[in-house]
Amino acid sequence: MATKKTSLRGLGAKFLDGAEPLIRALIYASGWSSIVFVAAIFFFIFREAWPILPRVNWGEFFFTNDWVPVPAEGNKASYGAMSMMYGTISVTIVSMVIAVPLGLGAAVYISEFATGKVKESFKVLIELLAAIPSIVWGFIGLVVLNPIIQDVFGVAVGVNLLNGSIVVAFMAVPMIVSISEDALRAVPDTYREAALALGASKWQIVYKVLFPAAKNGLLAACMLGVGRAVGETMAVLMATGNGMVIPENFANPAILLDKVRTLTATIVSELPDSVHGGDHYRMLFVIGIVLLVFSVVINVTSDIIVKGVKGDQKNA
Amino acid sequence: MPEVANTTQLAQSRFAAGPIEQRKVLVEGIAKKLMLVAALCLIVPVLSIITYIFFKAAPVLGLDFLWGVPEGGGTGGGIWPPLIGTFFLVLVSLCICAPIGIMSGIYLNEYAPDNWFTRVINMAVTSLAGVPSIVHALFGVGAFVLTFGMGESLLAASCTIAVMTIPVLITSTREALSAVPMAFRQACWNMGATKWQTIRTIVLPNSISGILTGVILEVSRAAGETAPILFTGAAASIPFMADSLGDKLMPYYLGDKFMALSYHLKVVADKLNDVPEAMKYGTAAVLIGLIFILNSFSIVLRMYLRSRKKW
Image 1 (tube, each protein chain N blue to C red):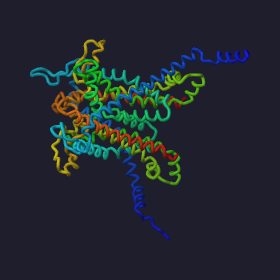
Image 2 (cartoon, helix red, strand yellow):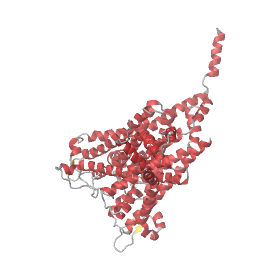
Image 3 (cartoon, each protein chain N blue to C red):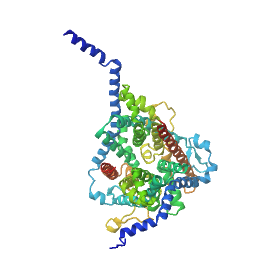
Image 4 (cartoon, chains in turn cyan, yellow):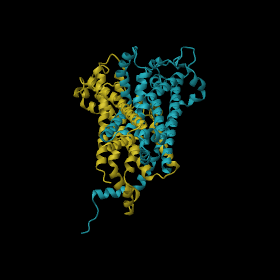
């Protein structure tokens, strides 16, 4: 009995096979789309900022302190972004001081010391930690940590550099942990076995063998943490107090309890009030360019560092 | 028996831990405890804060809160409009980025040759993943809201979110595909199948759960983002017909501004004194709950997948 293939499934398969050239074209187009998106991001942000770019006084932008986008009648607007850069840099440094030791410690514990169920649960918990959205961290800073900091340090307002840095540290840590853990796992087991055979303890293996062998990956993890801290928006907006001040004495630890304002927070809080197409509006896009260029440089560099690690192991 | 005692003594003196050995063991113990403390420092405070949020939110959490409409600018009532807004935002952005992200993952794992151009694509993917969310917001304003004439709307916000979350999908699709052994593909090619036939009948069926995990992660990411939707279509409050079921289920069209859970949380959190505490904590708890359910689902799916792997 000769049966012809006329089932729906057969027809579907025939159609899908016939469409192969079309589908291949679609797949190629999608594959290249990431380049298009990155180019489009650059294009549109530069396009909005374009008219003001030749007129930007870069010296003023990077090294002065007066951000007066809407000046009083008769005065000239000035765009000195140094206080925001101070905000971004200070939040990044303080948060990394908290996040890097915690992140590396946790990564070493999870990858080298923990076993079985403990290891699995830590990994799952860190993954859930990474999933908490930025706005929830902002909420935690503003509503939960704020009164705690007020009580502990006896200050009137608890949203400040310290609060923002704690929040950003916790946001950056899951990424630091997972990338460092990958880097540690990528070290071949033969290294560990060789050190073990020489009588090294686990801790000696970690800091004499694994740290040097995985140093590029660990460095990349910290760099990506920095990138995350610089680009973080909603959480720092809500948790840092949003005030443009540069402290006079950097040695004084009390600056931790001052308000700061980051580059990202400035864009969020001023874009709705700026006149579309005006200088102020375009200057906010200039800040966007600074952030964009910085993030791309950080990501591409750390990518190259990690790929370097992989190349090394192929040779080893 | 002096001789035996002598041997034991000898053994003790020769094999007992010397000072260096003792120090090694001590340092190892301390280091291990420090590492454990670091790991616990990450987990314990966050878990306790989240428990605290749920505890504070307990009085309002209930169907009335989820199904209700905000009253008095978020000071009372429920959170249905932002909840359904987030649902639509996620749905539309998923429709845009799922096909592109998955096909892009297929391209990078199955088609891309090993050359400089592919390396440029890979760098573009990592860069795209690292661009700060506020820069995505500026891009959304410049591109979708102004240039493409979408205005501040659900569609513009969804497009912005889609561009932002595409790297999540690309990376997880690629991981899922690369877990399928090469031998499967070779066997299929030997039967005379074309590349696309192989992908369709062998590679995709064997990696569909992994791709699904990526889709869930994308959904969870899209549901939590705030900065990119701030200027591209999210609204603090929208007049809402509380009683009409049709309005409740289909409140926003693609061209409308919309409410979203993440932005609603910012709005109520910023009003320090006007909003009752339970309302704020309630909104936060619903958002955290939503994200955790989505992520747990993806984790469970991955574990199930690993347990029944056939190769």
